[in-house]
Image 1: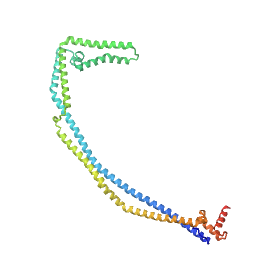
Image 2: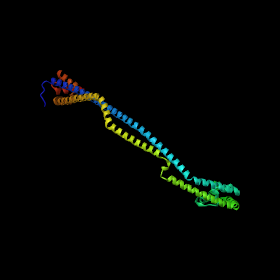
Image 3: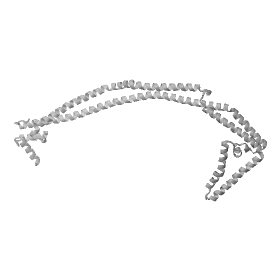
Image 4: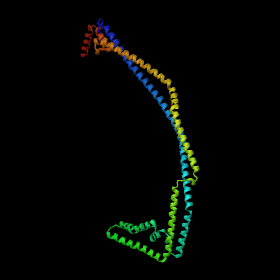
Length: 364
């Protein structure tokens, strides 16, 4: 509420003191705000340091537990892998021995037939190549393989080779291709017919006997392949004495499963029990400092609130008491002091006149 002013100088002096008090409160509020923020940062930094210490320690301990178990698990897995490899080697060796044993008679029979064929060729004085399977595939083919060998040989001699020679020529003409084909037919065909005539005319009986021997050998080879395939497909492993390996593998599998379960249990205990203990220990070590910082921060907040309340009240008081008379423009210590000096010097009779004198001076 506006009041009647009787002593203008005292009024201005009171206003000056109020403004100075407001300035002091403002500075104090700023300082307290800075102190409160500093303490808040220090508190947050200490909390973060404690949390980081907890997280780092927990992670390290967890990794140590996990690493110790992983090392044991790795050893067991390596032993299990090596045992399985040894088992496979033992099984493979057992299969080879079984194949060798069950095809022994057929292999021996084939060796006897080879000796018989070689002796017949030597006795008949036939060329040495008459004992080869390739010769019989060309001149006395029997069975799918020998017929296929004959077809592939003819295809190579009468198609692939002449066409390949034609592709190598720098100049390519159809006539050249025809001539190359004719040359290959004459050369390869001539050699084929010549060898056939020379061997069949002179050694036909021996070759027929050789054909029969080669057929027996081929038949035995087919039997050997059937036996070998049957043995390899046989699921019964009892004949290979693998029980020791199976026992070791079962024991290692059990040890591995138990170790993996122990790791899970250890990590579960760590997460539910040990982790809490570690956290409590670390936070307990920091509790004194944290409490001190929290108390200092709370005290700083309290002082700041009180100061801000006083500042707000002082602002309201100055606004209500002085601003309506002197205006916001003159609510500073220097200007209020200057107005008071004008009144003291008798240059003005009231505040409004003093303001007018002040402004007139500034205007000059």
